[in-house]
Length: 267
Image 1 (cartoon, one colour):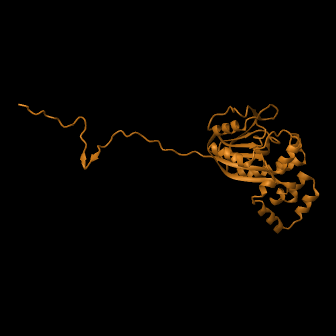
Image 2 (cartoon, rainbow, N blue to C red; image 1 turned 135 degrees about the horizontal axis):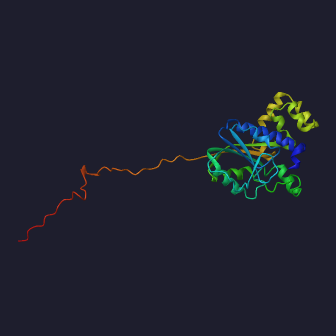
Image 3 (cartoon, rainbow, N blue to C red; image 1 turned 60 degrees about the vertical axis):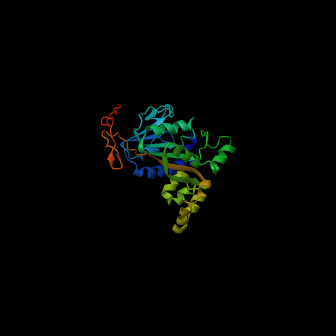
């Protein structure tokens, strides 16, 4: 998407790359899969700590990407350790089928990371008012609460829900970023320079505000980290040998050892 290369898109990718890197810090295994292109090809892949990492795209054009239909993945079941969906549900033709495919290919206790646009936030409102021109290519908005419900039906357990990129992009200040991190993204906007002059105590208070519930209504995006839960079941084996039942302390007579009835002499 072209708008990811301007100031608005670069600021969003900057925040998301750091959030995903922190979420993948404790995820290990053999295979990491990113379904859907979002920004440069390696913006998220470089943070994976698995042995192999791949990018799945729907169309030819991305270098090093596997081209396949995201709703019918040509991947073996129970073979992937972690999957990342960077705003893929908003552009997918069938988000339910996509989640079912991810449930199929993920290994037991595998991780799923979803980046999405917050439905009640100001970006979604502006997208609807502009007839889809504010965020080109975004067809729908899947809210965080709805996504968690979908994942629970598939047997996933949401371990983290994080809202980010609030109004005027103050999230990078709340994260404690310094001027060296901010300068490549924005070119020194007046409001960003003003916020960076705040004291450490003021930044700490803003960082605490980040966890309040009302923050979800001011944040443009969210990140949900879920884990595929598998209930361990112990198979019930059929007993080869059964003990004789006791009735009143006595052994029940079996069919082979039944009491023989002697007919009485009627003479």
